[in-house]
Each structure stands twice: as structure tokens, then as C-alpha cells.
Length: 536
Figure (spheres, rainbow, N blue to C red):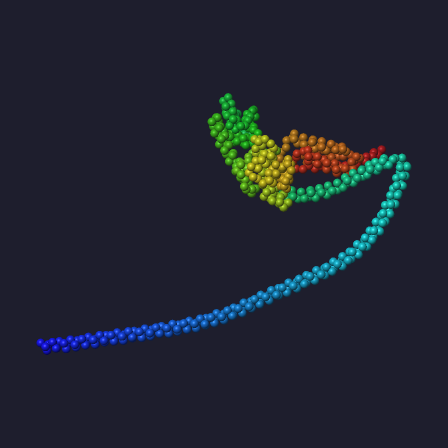
């Protein structure tokens, strides 16, 4: 028992020693491992530090190399820039030297000119001094002559008074009368010379402008006139137009506002109305009724309404066409409608719409020749007669009606003045008004442009002759060339050449003030002396 206990103690002591040794060994191993780890970590840290130091040194070396390259490149660029700057400065210096040389040349030339002018002025000054001396001598001589003339005039006056037996006042009146006659004659001669020169120049210039305008606008010589008769195939159709107890014709007149005249004239029915649009609607409606054959009040009202709408559309299209033809934009629809109404209006047989288009082109041609705005002149010409479209409905002249109508659509003052003043009713405020007046006269006076009634034609010729006969010294006057010229024959004993020129001017001025006529009228004054002898 004791042996076993001793053995157990020995074994326990041995086991405890082994454990201690194991613990010590483990502690030593841990210490060694920690020490080794620490050393390894120090080594790794030192290795990383060396690598970083090497990388930093390499980066620094690269940066130094790159900075050296950049510095070298900058030096090269700076040298090039300096060279370029030197070259630019050299060029500018050369240019400045050239400019200075040119300036020196100009100054030298001006100096030479100045010296030449000084020499010329010196020469002129000497000449002026000599001329002044001669003038002074001449003045003294003239003063002496005036004194001698005054003395001689006093002596002659006394002699004349003594011989004639007239008083001083009577002699003055006689001399003044003679001077007045001589002055009148000289004035007439001077006026004739100035008027002739001005007329020749104005006529030449006006002829050039007018011919150029007419040549640039090639218009037809005749215009279609609106008719007011309708062909009837037979007398039976006349009866159908009249209707039972006249109901058809009354319905037609009521629907159209015209007078229908059915007389014994074979094959014709006359449509009469002062409004050309209503007359055109009636003419077309009657032609369709006759062609259709169904003539009764209901059909008449239906057909007249249809034709009226067609005519309204046709007028609008005609106004648009005229606007496009003359290249004039910005016109209001109502202005286009009134322009279209002019298609059915005539003046002395001339279609007013075609006349307006023609005047528009002539205005542009004249304005272009004068250096003015051709588009504005064309607008003035196209709208100048627009008042004729409604002058049957509104009181007043067509000029004022047209101007008032266009004023509502904010037309320019030049256009309004041209519309209202193209017949001279108001003063012109712009050159476009006389241009429209000239173009209107050209369009109206060209061959075939207008027709004139015989009665009005004869009255115009008589008025021309009466105006010419109303001047002193006129023996006879004849209107020739369809009223385009007046031949005035004066008494050669009472009228000389200078007074004849004054008579021609006065007659022309009086015609302008008292008469209205298309185109121009030439006044020719004839003065001749006839010597007649008979041999027996």
C-alpha cells in the first residue's frame, strides 16, 4: 500500500515535471514565434520602405528628366516666340518706315505745291495791284466823264426845253413813256429767251421720260367696253321675257335694279342702269334666262342671286389679279373688291381697271427714271381711280371718295395725296402726285385710249378758240388736230415777235387754268407781214 502510494507520488511528480516542461517549451516557442514574427515584420517593413524609397527616387528622377525636357522645350518655344516677335517688330518697323517715306514724299509734294501756289499768289497779287491801279484810273476817268455828261445833259435839257417848249414834268413823262416801251420790249425778249430755253430743256427731259415710260409699258391700244344689250333669238322670246301682263320683266327689274327696254328693235333687248355691276349682273342673268327658256319670277330671283354671287367672286378675282400683275401686296379684301368693280366701269370707252394697271406701270417707269421709289409709285397709280367703283353710291368726287376709302386702311400719306390730288384738286405734298397726273394723262391721251362724245368734243374746240380770241392783237384762232393744237394768228402791225411769245404763254396758261382735257395742247402763234402789189 505504501509502495503503491509512493509509486503514484513518483508518477505524479514525473507528470507534473513533464507538464511544466511542456508549458515552458510552449512559452519558449511562443516567445520565439513572436520574436520571429516581429523580425519578419520588421524585415517586410524595411523591404517596403526600401521599395518606396526606390520608387520615390525613380519618380523624382523621372520628374527631373521630364522637367528638364519641358524646360528645354519652353526655352525652344520662348526662342521661337522671341524670333517671331522680332520678325513682327521688324515688319512693323519696315511698314512704318515705308509709311514715313510715303508721308515724306507727300509732304514734299505738298510743299512743292504750296511753293508753286505761293508763287502764283504772288503773281496774282501783282496783277491785282496793277488792275487796282488801272481800275482807279478808270474810275477817275469815269467820274470826269460823268461830270462832263451831267453838264452836257443839263445843257441839252435846257436846249430841249427851249426848243420843245415843254416843261420838265412833261419831258419826264415823255422820257419815261419811251423807257417803259423799251423796257417792255426788252422784258418780252428776255422772257421769250428764258421761256424758250426752259421749255426746250423741260420738253426734252419730259419727252425722254415719257417715251421711256411708254416704251417700257407695252399696253394694248384699245380696251373692251361693257355692253348693255342682249340678243333675242325671236319675237316670241321677247314676249316670254315680258311675261303675262309684264310680271316677268317687273320681277327681273326688281331683282336686278335695272331698266329693261323692250321695243320694236329686232333681236335686241336693252338693259339700262347707271351702276355697271348691276347692269352686268342683269345682262348675264337675262342671257342665261333666254338660253334656259324657263322664265318666271321664282326662276328669275334664283338665277339673279346665283349670277350676283358669281360676279362678286369675279370682281374679287379681278382685283387679286390686278394686284398680282402689278406686284402690289398688303391690299385689304375690300380694296381688292373695289378694284375688281372697276372691271365693269368705263371712262370714255376705256376700261378703268386696265387704265389703273396701265397707270401703275407708267408711274413706276417715270419714278425709276427720276430715281424715286417705283413700288410706291406703282401703288399710287393702281389706287388712283378706286373711288370710281363707288362714286354712284357715295356723294363727292371720285378722288375724295377714293382717298377717304383708302384712309380707313392706313395707306401712306403719299398714296392718299396722289389719289385725292391727281386732278389738281389739292396741292401735291410729294413727287408721286404729279407722276400719277402725268401717267393718267399718258394713258388717257394715247391713240385709242378713250372715246369722246361729239358734243363734248365740239365744246372743247370752241372753248379753245374763245380763249385765244380774248387776247389783244389776235385776229383769228383755229383749233386743229382734234383739239391738240391751237393756231393763233396775230396782227403783225400791233404785235411784234416778243409780244407774240407772251401771247402764246398767256393762252397756254389760261387753257391750263380754265379747261380739263386729256394729254397736252400746243399753242402756236403766227405773225407774218404780207406785201401785195399789182402790176398793170
